[in-house]
Image 1: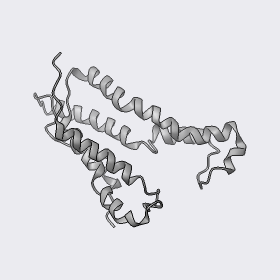
Image 2: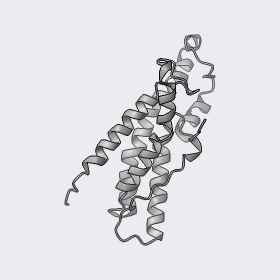
Image 3: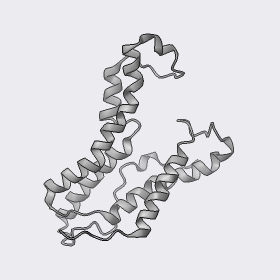
Image 4: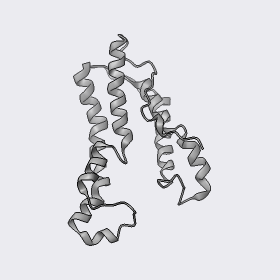
Length: 172
């Protein structure tokens, strides 16, 4: 099977996007940069486009090659497996509280860790923390369907970007 050549500028743009996501996470859940308050404005600006960048690049690099089963397996390996593995981080606190209840006071959070079932549902089903990987998986599957219905013989999305998280963009 012939290996396709990677497009360097897309790889650079993805790297920049990852850097911006990491930088954006310097803020807390309220959007304030607690570590570096002087960066609040910059972080707000980054939040206006950094996830759109990933969806746009995903549209540019979308491919249906190999049929639906191969597509699903490939996307599960590259999106769902990391989603499940890294989600374990988000359930570590509630599991620690169940195993060692004395730890609950040590966690400085207003979050209730007493119901592990709710935590597991929130993390693995609702995508708390890593919502992007699940949303991107769903967008890719939708894109496969759209390009199939449109009979796109090129097997590529042609730069179409589906953005199911647009409700997250807030302009203040």
